[in-house]
Amino acid sequence: MRPDPKADVAGYLKRLGLERPVRPDVEWLFAVQRAHMERIPYENLEIQLGRATSVDPVEAIGRIARGRGGYCFHLNGALGTLLAGLGYEVTRHLGHVRGRTVDQHAPELTINHQVLTVVCEGERWFVDTGLGDAPYEPMPLRAGYAARQGPFTYGMERWSGRVGGWRFVHDPRAESFTSMVFAPEPVKPAAFAEAHQRLSTSPDSDFVRAAVVGRRDARGADVLRGRVYYRVDGAGISKRLLETPDEWFALLADVYGLELPDVDGPARERLWARIAEAHERWLAEREQAEQSADPEAAETA
Image (cartoon, rainbow, N blue to C red):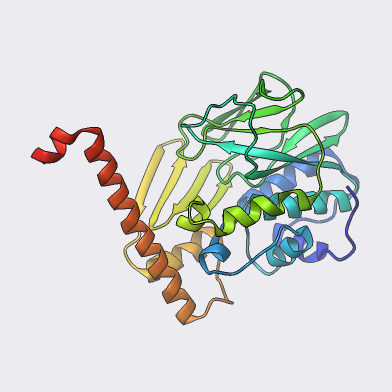
């Protein structure tokens, strides 16, 4: 992967709070992933605001430098370009994040994630800042490797569905996804354009259906889904329902550093209305699911 001279590397590094590395070493690779997870939130608010984005890493770097985040195609897209520009050997891969209802070892690859691997100091590393609550630091690509990072334990294993493929295993206590598989072949950023279009526009996409914001730190994760904010750390999971738009936008700023200076009053009102509507839809769907699972209990409730 070649560096891109149009990328705002200085603005990106300033947002990360890091200086350029003297040389592309493992120590800085760990530092940049930690800083990215803490300072650059995982978020899909542009989708919720009805604003189109692309998978162009330079565009994503510019948005990050202006104080925003993004989801995997933006975050890993930007980081891959940054690392390549600093002399790291970086490869992008097609990935598939899988929930609990999906066969974790199925050979099919429904592209919904961009993966980065980096060769540095004789080791190939899994480097990912686009999975929301995981992981906090790079992991070596070694079959059977397990890492304890804060309250979570992650695993790395071979993906039986694809020769040369890999599977990142999330901690089962996390209320997000189960695993992520990725193919070994290198791809360019344009390979994610079709998946990005689907995920950012389809009514069936989780990114369209609900607002999601996340960040990691050394002790745990902060996740906002719609109107529900929860913190996962060594003490367990604590949840809070955000009752008002003022409370919601204040939490965005305080926890995630998202001031949203380019979102004016009317746009904020529309965004909150969309989030509130999605929350009511989620409650109705949950109630319907509970009734379908136990009709006698629903009748006597």
